[in-house]
Image (cartoon, rainbow, N blue to C red; front, side, top):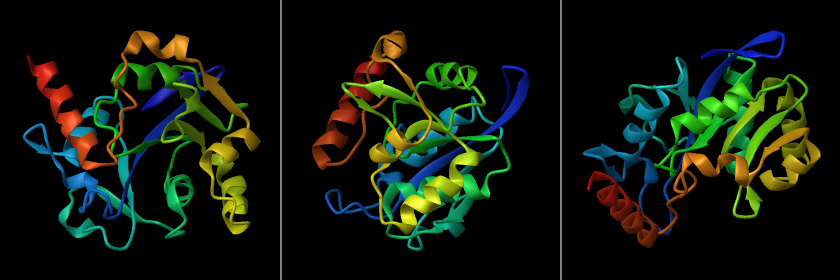
Length: 206
């Protein structure tokens, strides 16, 4: 996707962080059944409404050969989401990357498009604020932030929220995102979360 950002036109790609096997769920959350397919397919199809270029960032155990999406191996395995964000920025051919966690199935394409329209060249990150905290895995990162993120990883400073405080971050308030709904940031970490997600999906159908 190419957008106007001030006087500049900025290309934006999307990176889906798929991670590995979830200890609490017992499988990779990307392949949980969802919408007659799986979580990854559902998320990818939604992102295709916004982005022309989408790729995955995965660890070594992820079956990239079985996926019809460009798949990048994590440059910093076992370093959590921060390693995935860095990998996305290093491999992107765009000014900004929308980094998204695969376990948030109710993403709003309208919100993502609105966030992209807010991009300004002076910021490293554009991140929404929801229920008192930032959402770093539903955020836009400038490629220029890659070196700062790499430095943080090399110092074992792996908290994404702490990094946002050090980077030049444009926070989007809860009031601003409220019109886009209230399930966009629902993420699946436990079997109970998965059951709740299926219930939300059923309610949407009805």
